[in-house]
Length: 65
Image: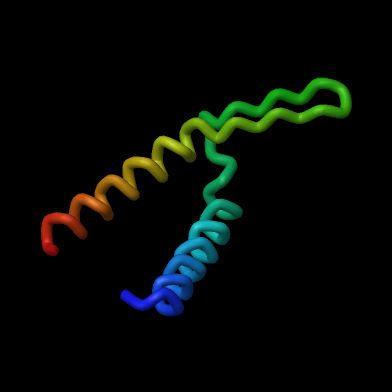
C-alpha cells in the first residue's frame, strides 16, 4: 500500500474512533474521581470494549488474508 493512501486510511480510522469516543466514551464502569479542581478519568470499560472489537477486526483480517 502506498504511503499517501495508508495515511488517508489511518486518518479516517482516527476520525471514526474520535467520534465514537465522544459517543461511547463515558459508559458505566469507567472510573471518574473528582477532588477539588482536579478530575481523573480512566475509561477502563471503554478500553476493554475497544480492545475486544479491535481483536475481532484483526482476527478476521488475518483469517481472510
